[in-house]
Image (cartoon, rainbow, N blue to C red; front, side, top):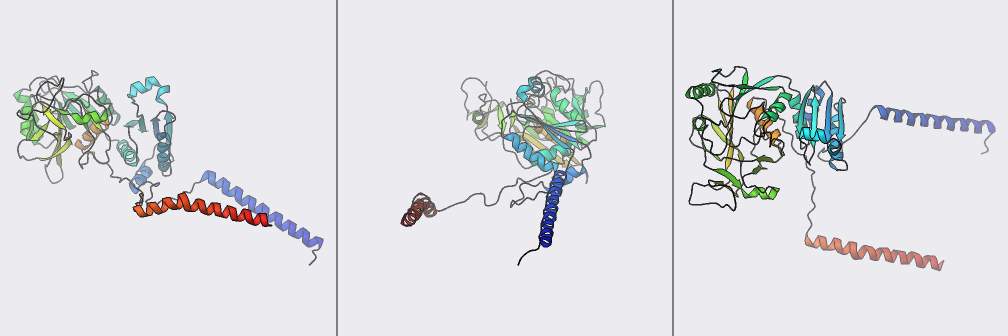
Length: 448
């Protein structure tokens, strides 16, 4: 069939219109892709999608969230953090991420006590959370804590040589007090000799290894405080007997000497008096917590008697530890014929009891007052763990349990016969087939 010029022009015009419409469609889709993004998670366990709890929290946050990651350049963890934050941006557009190399800002690194592992700061509504380890669970729980705008008060007992939340000496708690303040938890000090009452606005009383004994009248005030069902944090030290009256009242006994742990050498710590904790029992304080914590000089604790409190061990040393009653110098070893005890040894307990149908009294006793001191609070997870204890004690234990997503069918187990067949096939059969095919093609071409 012969096409006339008119029909030919009509076909050209039709093709031009179709091409123009196709190009317009492509351009429109390209423009829409810059304004809107569509992502589909096709992984079997939705490993690239945030949990419903994280999504709900992000949608409820109205203000800007800024994440600053102090990570050295060239480290692969930068891309991992960026990928995680991108998942959060899908549900919260007011979230920004900035990377800073600590080596280029040495003054800031010293101010924030940034170690080799780096540091992540999350800022929201003028409050800041610090993370040394970041995943969905830790980041979501940090945002959850920042979303709480209520101001709370924590009272530190003073007047007997205790560690102060306002002082900056190595063994004081000034840095911890600042971190509490950033989270709208106000630290106040009280001397019971000057003001013989614990303020009613206090959500928690903190007692840190007094250097001298308390007066009988002060003990009476503290016992009445406990009897009323108020919350308490006790930080004691090895061989410090000035809290013996309180520990006996709580049904806890402090063992003689201090814990030494040869297991610490596995983490590069050569001082046996340093105890490291890497495994934690299931509790609201430790939910989702995966970071090592460091305790410089530790006293072992035991439940002395059955009382009105439910007691649960919170921190324990390894099986290679024991209580050393002698001087920790030179070559030390366990003395079976003495008062020394072998590990594992509990050095922190959680005590709870119901005051009424709705109120639970919460007490934590730790056999080390140094792990939150200015000299040690920057080590690994010490700060995070201390904040978790305080949050739980003041009944702000809203941690979200976000399970770690692991890929299904991640490992492939083969029998020895299957491994032999695969190895034989890849090393011999497939190369022979390729060589035979090549020779066959070469021969046919040569015949032609």
